[in-house]
Each structure stands twice: as C-alpha cells, then as structure tokens.
Image (cartoon, rainbow, N blue to C red):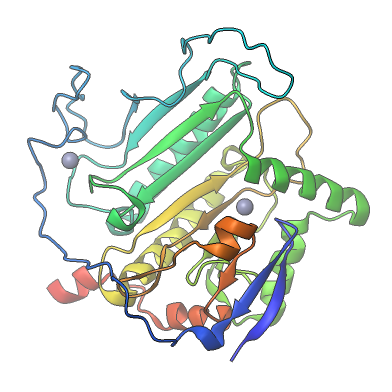
Length: 344
Ligand SMILES: [Zn+2]
Ligand SMILES: [Zn+2]
C-alpha cells in the first residue's frame, strides 16, 4: 500500500498517491473497448492514401509517412486579426501558427505499436525535420508534436497519425519545464533530468526498458496509473539533437513500451503522447532534456481516470495507484505484440 505525497520535480507540485483507494466500489460507467477488425484501406478514411479530405484536397498516394497541413487548423499563418479591445485585463491577438498531421503509415489498421523498428526510426527522423524546419521560422516559438490515441481520448479515426502544433507561444507545461530545467542547472550544475534518470536507475523498480542510449521508466512522481517517460540518456534539448545511433536506440525502447502497453489488456492501449522539447523562441535551453511522456487515461481495463475536484478544481493530481505496482505490471508484459503471438 502506498499512501503519501510525492514531489513532481518537473512541475514543482505535489502528487497525492492514495493507492489504498484503488479498489473502492465503482458503480459508474465503464469504457468498453470493442476491438473491431479494421481493413488495411478504408475509402471513407480522410487519412488513407489517395482519399479526398473534407477540404477537397486529396492525400498523396503515399507509401511510407505522409505530412500535410491540417484542414481544420487551430492556428494558421493567415489567422484573422481580431477587432481591437478596449480593456485593461483582456487581450487578444491572431492565432498565428502552423498545424500539421503526420500519417505514420498508409495502412489504416496499424498502430504505432505495430510498426517495425525501422519504420519508427523513419518517423523519428520526420519529427526531427519537422521540429527543425518549423522551429526555425521566426513566428514559431514552440513546436508541440503529439499523438492522441483511442476513443477514450476522443479520437474517432484509428488511422495511425499524430499532430503538430507550431505556435506563436510556448505551451504552459513546456514553459514550466524549461524554466525549472534552467534554474536547476544554474543551481546544481547538472540537468534535472539527469538526476531523475539517476534516481530511477538507483531504485530500479520502475524502469520499463533500457538500452545503450535510451531509457523508459514509470516515474516515481507519476500522476497517471501507467504514465511512462521515454528519453535519451544524454541531454538534448530536442529530438533534432539525437544521433543516428540514438534514434535507433530510442525507437527500440519506444517500441518496447508501446507493445507492453497493448499487451496489458490485449487492446490498442489509449494514450496522449506529447514530445516535450525546448521552445524555439531564441532562448537558452541547453539544460532542457527532450523526452516523450505517455499520459494514458485508463487506470484499469475499461475504467477511466476521471479528472475531478483535486485535478480540475485544485490543480494537483490524486493518483489511486502505486507507481511501483503499475511499473511491475508493465515490466512483466511480453515485448512481443499480442497480435503477433496470436498469429505465430
Ligand atoms: Zn485510413
Ligand atoms: Zn515533460
């Protein structure tokens, strides 16, 4: 039983771990994951190769990875300028930015977990290019790359894809991590993420996968039951700094985490997966350590973690699970995807 508060050093806030509440009675609704057998190509899918999108534009007949500008962008280079406000506290400005979609594969029925390691490597290289190219534009202060996966996080189209928001501001979580990383480095002379990796290695119970240059762990301060961080061992402010060898190693560790997630309950495991990378606003972020964070919404098969009073009302997380127990569950999972085990 874990019942304590743990400090989240990258957010500078307390997480309440109350794992003794995990088995409290639940009479509410559950999410039913009915795994449909999907076709490899779907004529109604706006992400499948050659298909027409709502905008009238057509997808290329792509064979590997396909990047295009979002037809319904939240930000755009030509976003309208609003009328001038006459107010002391209220401000407004154009929603300037670039929103893109990256299709991982032409195959409608695949997920990131099922891509072969070289295909994941190609995707990492596309993310490197996108971060570098979008981040070098003067109007772009940050490039947020993320994948929302599964109906539990509101995604209705299973075609494997992620999104890119290149914005004229830095998202709050990144702004905080960047500030905390630089302050910690100034004070102690080491990147904070290096000390987090060292603490995880010293404990050892929460490491999910590791090779020469990459590591995945369920952090001591996890807010979500199956929260996992994937990071290179060396500090690079963005994915663009990874060498070819580091890309290969990172793809291998990422793949292992994704497969273990799917194997937990033998369903395509839903998550929100952001890449945390340094802002591109010209500041000094040499102590920022690029990493991927997985925020899975389920805490049990078919049971959502609801964000309520503590999280929405108060701004701090209350976790009903023990990070050590959840890490042990993931560590115990096979690194071979259940769909392949079934076929083989
Ligand atoms: Zn599709
Ligand atoms: Zn982060």
